[in-house]
Amino acid sequence: MNQRLESDHEDLHTLLDELYAALEGSDVRDIYQRLDLFWARLAIHIRAEHLHLFPAVLHALSGPEDVAQAPSLAQAQNTIEELRRDHDFFMHELGRSIVAMRDLLKTTDRQLIGEELQSVHTRIAAVQERLSAHNNMEENEVYLWPARLLNEVDQAALHERIEMELRKIPPRFSE
Image (cartoon, rainbow, N blue to C red; front, side, top):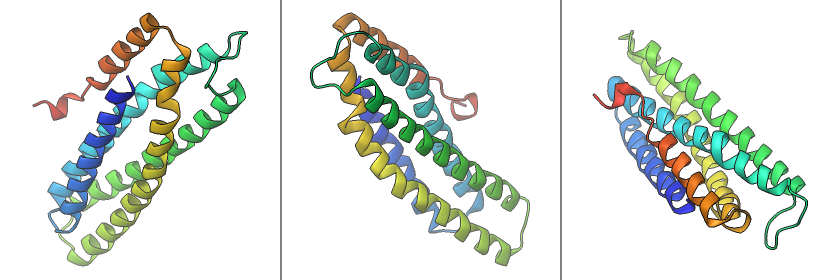
C-alpha cells in the first residue's frame, strides 16, 4: 500500500515538473491543461488518504492496546491534522490558480497574462515547497503505520480501497 501511494507521489511530481516546464512558456491553454490535470490528480490522491488511509489508521489506534513501533492515538491525530491542513492549502492555492488561468483563457492582454502567470507561478512554487515536506512526512511516517497496525487481510483491503480511489480519474482526462 505504501509503495502505491509513494508511486503516486512520483507521478504527481512528474506532472508538477511538466507544469513548471509549461509555465516557462506563455501558452495559456497548455499551462491551464497541465495545471488542471495536476490539481485533479492531487485531489484524487488526497481523497484516497482522507476516505481510506487516515480513518484506517485512527480506527486501528483507537483500540485498547498499544502497538509496538506505532504512534499513540494523539500523535497520529496531530500528524493527520497537519497533513489535512496541508491538503487544504494545496487545494486552495491550486484552485485560485485554476480560476486565474480560466480568466486568462478569455483575454489577449499580454501584460495581464504576464502578471497573472507570475502569480500562478508563485502559488505553484509555494505548493511545491510545502508538498516536498508533506510527502516526506507521509512516506516516512503515515504510510508505514498500516503495516504496523493492521493484519494482512485488513492491509490488503485498505490497499484495494486506495487503489480503487486512485483510479477514479475525471472523465475529462480519459477522452
